[in-house]
Length: 106
Image (cartoon, rainbow, N blue to C red; front, side, top):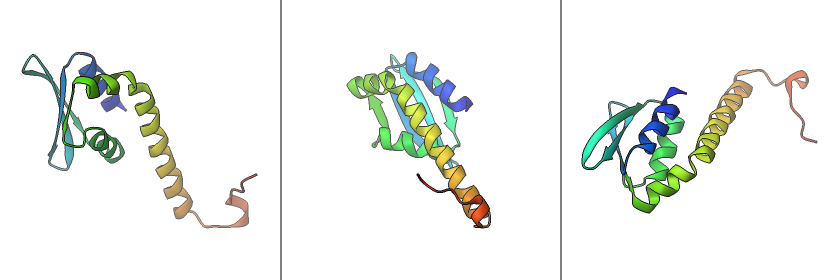
């Protein structure tokens, strides 16, 4: 996901992250010294939802932004795991449930 790489670049060079909805996408603006220096448009629904949960009011700054920077690797892992889980759940629903393709927990 290229969006995650762009988000990381924006996080490393900013003091504030602003989120806003634009045409069914989430626009992340990275501000440093009062100037927007990078804008990332996130179209992935899972990533957008998790970003909204991270910055509930659409603004992430100060200690909150520093914490997000420090835990960005685990955030990325969480987003990727959630996307994989949703894809697997969708593929299991789409396939027929026969004894051959059922997965049994040990």
